[in-house]
Structures are given as C-alpha cells and as structure tokens.
Image 1: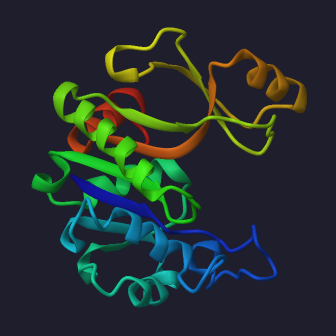
Image 2: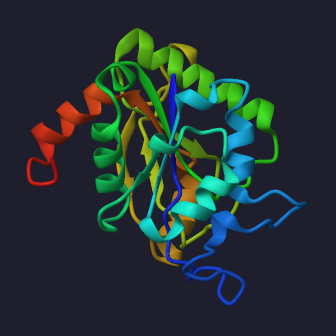
Length: 215
C-alpha cells in the first residue's frame, strides 16, 4: 500500500495559535510532535518512507520537509492552487507514478488525533484488504457520540456485509442541530473521517466517469 497525507491548510481554525505558514497540522497539541509527524508515525508500521506522498502548498513546502525528512523530496507534492479535498486527492494521485497508484492508496488528513494507533492500523488494514480483493473505494467513519454539526456524516445501509463492511448510502455535509440529533438517534450514521482507501487507478477512472470537469 501507499499513503497520501493531505497537509495543506490556511491556518484559520486554531487562530491565533496557527497561522498561514504554521497551520494546525504543524502544531504540537499534545507532547512535542506535530500532528503531521504523529500522522506519519501512526503509518510507519504499515509503509516505508518511500511509500508516502504528502500533498501540501508552496508556502508550507519547507516546514513539511523539515517535519518529514525521511520522505523523498519529490514525494512532497505542491498543489498549484487550493481547490479543496477531492481536487487535491485527484491531482495528487495523478502525480504519483503509475506503478504506485496501481495498488491500494490510503488517503488521510494530517491533522487528526487518534488515541488508539494500533486499533486504527488494524481497521486501515481491513480496508486495504477489501480494496485489494474487491477493488472498492472504502471510507472510514467514526462512531458519533454527540449530535455534532461541524462534521460531515456517512449514512450507511442497514445490513453489514461479511467482515463488517457497510455500504455507504450517501454523504451528508454538515447538518443542522435537529438533523444531527436525528442522525445520532438513527444509529446508522458515522462521522466522515475523511480517510479513504482505493486503488489509485480506480479513483482516477471514477473521476473521469463521474466528474469529467474535475478530471
């Protein structure tokens, strides 16, 4: 598998602690390691430095390289312009060598806090195995514990498939408080973690089919 870490950002969410040249993923919010470094360390048992790509901006190129000196410099990808998550993923996957994107690619944000790294890797490994076996596009979700209006949601089909995999019926962007309460009570909604696993070549094919302008 390969890993693609999304590490752009404008530094607005944790202002004034974060700035344009030091957004949230470059901050050490617990201990001494930045969120970006923690993201990389969580992946280390699964990938080598040569199997990691990072999508960031021209302004953050040097700080990101300093945080991740092991990652080959040519695999620190600098977006030509900020266009949100889907364009960043598509452009980054297209920028990877063909042989790298032919297999499973794990895409994950650089600014998550994950308490149980081993459980996270086990879940990620299950998703990778499904992708390698069935060529699906997988999304990881978080079981919600409050009616949060600041996150997107995944609505799941009621029945689980073998291995505990659930099909996603739809993505729902940040809901109203009333809708979020309904999602929480329904029991078949997850917070969208923004973590995806797919064959890179499959994703590019889907973009060309479903979002030709973006492709």
